[in-house]
Structure formats: C-alpha cells, structure tokens
Image 1: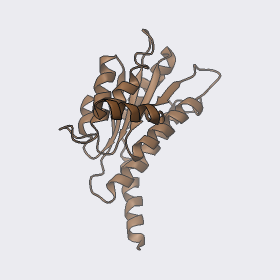
Image 2: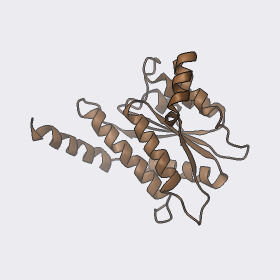
Image 3: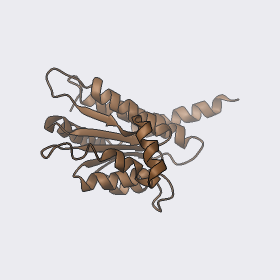
Image 4: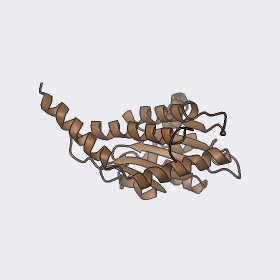
Amino acid sequence: MSMASITALRDAVAAVTADLDTAALDAAVRVLAACRATGGVVLSAGLGGSSSTASHFAADLTKFTRSPRQPHLRSVALLDNIACHTAWTNDDDPGLALAHLAEPWLPSHPDAQDAVVLFSVHGGARDGSVSRGLVELAAYAHKQGAMVIAVTGFDGGATSDLADVHINVPLRREPLATPGIESVHLLVAHALCLALTDGGSR
C-alpha cells in the first residue's frame, strides 16, 4: 500500500474541480429553478455507484433547498423504487426500465418545466452496449418535453449527445478516473443544491 495513489487521486480531483464548466453549472441551476417555479418535477437516475449519487441528489433537492419563501422543489430518484425497476427489467426490455419508471411523472402537468438529471461515469456507450437505460430515459424525457441534464465523465458518451445541459468531469485514465469522477459528481450535486438555496448565489 502506498500514499502515491491517494495523492494522485487528490490531485486529479482538485484539477478537474478547478476547471468545472461554470457556464454549464449555471445553466443546470436555471433549469432546476424553472422546475421549481413552474411546479415541475426533477427526476434523477444513475447506474451502479451513480445511482446512490442520484438518490442523494434527489434527497438534497427536496430537503436542503426547502424554503418558506419559494415553492417546494419536487424531486424523485427513479431507482429508489427498486421493486418496480426490477419488475420492469424482468418483464420487459431491461433497457427501457428507467423510461418506464419515468412515465407516471412526465409531464408532471401541462404548464410545468420538468427535468431529468443523469449521473454516469462513462455517459453510456454510443452503440447501446452499456448504460442503454440512461440513454432511453433521456430520449423519453425529451419526447415528454423535459430538459435533460447529463453529469458525466470521460468524453460524456451517449447521454451527453442528448443533453440540454452537459456537466463533464474529463478524467479518462483508470484507476483514477472512476473514483475521481464519482467524487466530483457528488460535489456537483451539492453545488447545484447550494445554488438553489436562499443563501446560494444565482
């Protein structure tokens, strides 16, 4: 065991955090603020470790951004309903499971701005071989008039191609890439929520 790997991860995360696209972060905050203002819903999703980031994000959007001076922001992490997700993956095309989970939520009502926020290390393979469910969810969200925010790593993958807003953490070399990207994704989630609080800058 060596401190070298810890130092390397620390330095990689620090570098990409310093270079995060502030314009993309601002655009994402504006989308989420529009959801709140119009009574829309924010759906979040990710696969593997990113599913826990999506769940954490939904919890913070619901509780951390709560204010007596602003409308309550409605947020749901789709994979928190694991029973329904496994039912869809068992009974239908697994790649469509996330889109099916989104069906009852989108559109939330005719005048709402809704959004889907996707967390994914690779962003989904463009040939559909990996994380197809996220890509199908993004496509379904657009059909329902929702905005898509993709929070990715590497080159952004297929979800970045469909995103209205793309926040990328451009680490590409393992074994640092995946833990580094996932770490910064949680920082991004917290930053977005902070910007939506009364004390955050907008």
